[in-house]
Image (cartoon, rainbow, N blue to C red; front, side, top):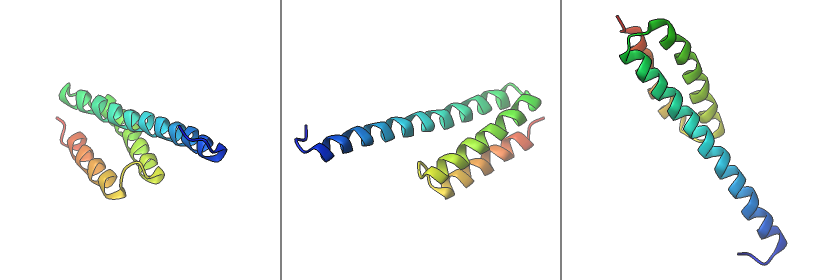
Length: 87
């Protein structure tokens, strides 16, 4: 545990940012998981609604620096093709 006042504050700030990042990454993963379930259940309307949320979450995570832009683009592309190819 740090002794200097600014270092103590830095520890608190870092913990808060880390917690927020973990929550947002979990939100992204959960939305992707929900989309995968909708695709396997062949619920096209539901999948399209969830896909919009997934895209929003991925873009926001990429803008915050939680994931890289290329990773977000690749995931969006793969999920979009899955939704498009549903029967």
